[in-house]
Length: 104
Image 1: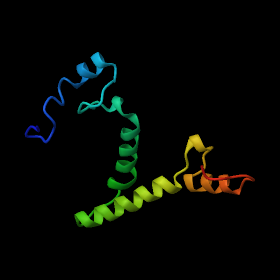
Image 2: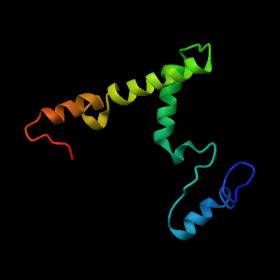
Image 3: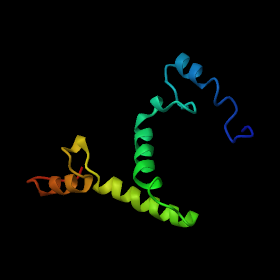
């Protein structure tokens, strides 16, 4: 059964207690709690700084197209520290270029 916000009954306010008592951890991130999911907050901050603060959108469709283009650029060509400051595309190409570089 769902409530008026579309959540299952019992979901929300008591989820932290339920997770703590069952040993599963928090499955619900409280609004205004960016420290519970820093990866998403980092991505949102970059999107805001690199796209939304610099563009003036004339329509929702234009915003969606530019956002998807930005995500593609970020996900494929943005350098990552965990990859030795290579982009995911360059890192993938370097793995294939090595002898014995096979896909798992």
